[in-house]
Structure formats: structure tokens, C-alpha cells
Length: 210
DNA sequence: ACATTAAGTGATT
DNA sequence: AATCACTTAATGT
Image (cartoon, rainbow, N blue to C red; front, side, top):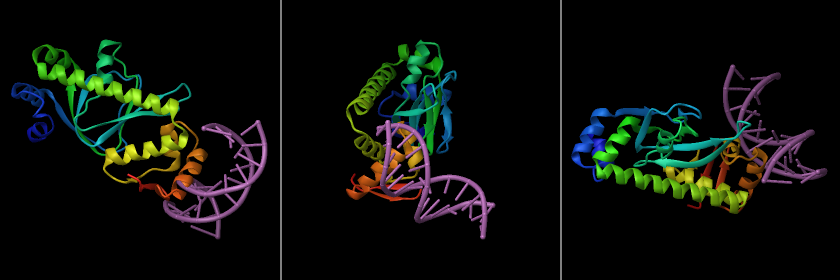
């Protein structure tokens, strides 16, 4: 575990902080598809990600989902911070996109380290900032891009975070993430295939134009 | 062989 | 871009 810490965060944090992280954090392996945080759930820990990827979803009144963004190695969930300040409940749902190794840190430590370590302060502020940018990007995508462009971006993003040009999910799954209907997804995917950008098969989609 | 699930398509709004 | 209705294809039991 120390090795993992050094590799992913060693250049960021001073040795004393690494020691503390090692002492208080619990290492965890999350299997793909596992739900590690749901809406309304109390937040008690913050994650530090070593490998893999996690997708962050929002849900509407009818229970329909919408993908917000992915978090990857070196990231932490920015929602954790706002939840610490607010009511402590999660506003989002987090599901492992692939098998993920992460470290769980009790949220009390967040405050403590904020005053104690400048590197931690910078890390938190910086990830807050990048998260904010990502959110803006998804808003742009939602507001300005057409559905076919959104699908293409979605596929590329997923290929990126999983390091795999094959997306293992059904049209229905894609539709859920993008908050649209399966029929629309099937149609647009068919078009993208005709354009030579992807290759379709049952239960998976291969992205050609990376 | 039959049921179930995934994907493709025309027509309508 | 969403919905309906229906078809076809692949897969599980």
C-alpha cells in the first residue's frame, strides 16, 4: 500500500502526510459495477483513487439517471467537500466504472490536514477546481451538443477512463447514462457505425475513431 | 423448442 | 429527439 501511495501521490504530499494517510486510510478494492455511494447517503469517508475509474451520476425525480463525469486515479470526489460543509448527505451516486483500488479516509481528517499540511490544502483546492471545470464541460455538452455528438463524446470518454476501445454495455445502458431512450441511441449508433467511427456488436461497442 | 433480452426500423408527434 | 409498435437476431434454459 505504501508503494501505491508513493507512486500516485508521493510527488504531491510530504512524507509526514503520507505517513498519516497510510495510518488512517483503509485500502479497498471495488469491483466493476459496484455502487460505492448513493444519493441521500451519509458521507463519512473521502476516496483517494489509485487505479480504475468511477462514474458519478445524478438522478431526477422519476429515478432517471444522468452521467456527470468520471473520476480517475489521482482524483478524489469533490462532492465530498461540499457535503462536509452542508448537510453531510450525498447529492450524487457513485458507481465503479471498472475495478478500482482506492483508499478511504475519514472526513474528519480532511479539516485536520487542511490546516496542518499545505500540500493537502493545495491538493483539495486543485481537485475542487478541476471538478468544477469538468462540470462546466458537461453542462456545455448538455446544452450545446446534439445527441449524436454527445454519444460520441460519451464513448470516447469511457474508452479513455477504462483504457479500452471496447465499451461493454448495451444500448439501453448508454441511454440511461445520457438520459435518453434506447431507440434514439440505437439509431444514432447505427449512423456512427455507417460513418465508420464505431463498430457495433451485441453487448459491446468498439470505438474506432480515438 | 421456447422464452427472454438486445438491437434495428418505420411511422408519428 | 421521443414514443409506439413491431421485427429480427442472439442467448439462455
